[in-house]
Length: 291
Image (cartoon, rainbow, N blue to C red; front, side, top):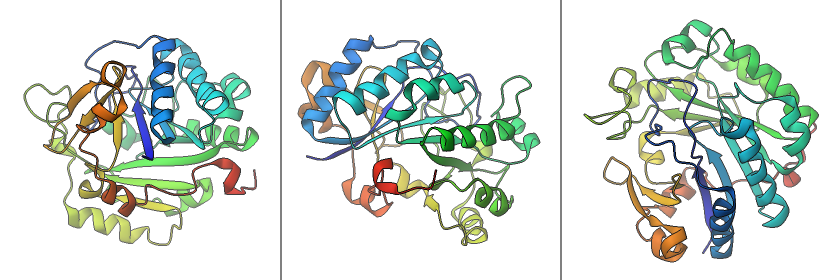
């Protein structure tokens, strides 16, 4: 069994993005050694790629927690690809100095190059300028040989924006462009912590945005259909999250029942994973980048 694995970091957010579909409903953090045990189990089951997302992965212990997991995955488990998705607000140069060599890809979430739009969306903390920080992180990735990626969620507030010039200038290895997605209990419904309905766009709107950026060679689009069941996601308890019914339904923890038993309840669609381009050159050693 080959697993392209995305583990949701057990941390809360420091941003309040209105469309967020994995909100922090608990403050639970798995002990480091238990997290390592679970990761080793996944490697034994065939995992080739791990992606730490959130919450915001750099909140816990000022990035030391995720840094130690990144190092463990690359150095001890020898995974081909180790990546992080972050809003970038808490990343320091010292982290790159300590852990950068173990990280293949750093993906920074950026939905707009207009700071007023970022404020509307909720992608801002205090007086920090999200776009300025994005450029700083891009430079650090060059300095420490980490492949740089951008994730953008296309929604009602940025769907008319032209990002061609800015994306080409930043030159990421991949620009993942997501259509704003509703997940019951996360950003939609009575028990949700976010109300994302006002952010939703139609398939036609999403297609127009993609057409406007068709000349950006690194663009990788993900519609709602491609996104929903094409990821293997673990929560902070190391439970697979099944999104097939429009909400996140957890399996039992792999720490209790093992990977083989838990993954049966993941709802993972391998065909859609391959269709959306989930398998790509994901190890920086194979990218032959000009740092």
